[in-house]
Image (cartoon, rainbow, N blue to C red):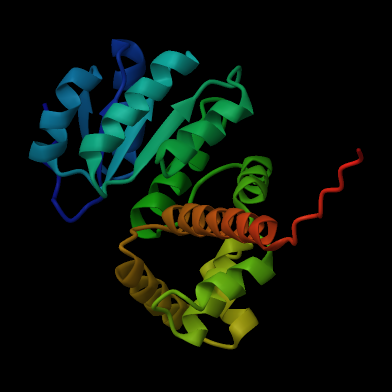
Length: 243
């Protein structure tokens, strides 16, 4: 079932139910020099993820939100740290693409995009911890997960991070890529990657998206706790009764 190309090539596990579409995608991806495995449905995927040990799982979705979200949830549960890249039709709502990413997928490519877009996405998610979305989708995702800088800096002090690591976190939350973070902090892109690795290890995370979600959740909890404390600390008004 699997190609016998060299193991050092990027290994793609393709999940697509329709035979013609699956064969066409497999031929296209193999033409780029990738090692391609194929599976028709998710029922076989867990076994093939273990046996094939892919670098990327490429999942073709139908566009049915209920079915697709269940499939993504199931795949994420046994993919572990293997990045999941989803293919979606152009008729899909952008909110579905964002939801798929928020469930844990590392990116979404629309089926109407040129083949080069898919090739770039595969390289990106296999070689970096960055998320692959079109510009408008990424902007919307960052907006959804963005946290006020003041909350980040205040809350970050309680985390086991160095001052430089907190600066890197704040810039990741703003949506900056490694190169841009390096330029902003006057450090090399390699140093940024080292800082991110240290941050992930300290916080028990594995990707930028997990970091953004983590910071968003903790900051939201802090805001809620502060609001609750403020309400409790308000002096109670004296009550006056009239007879």
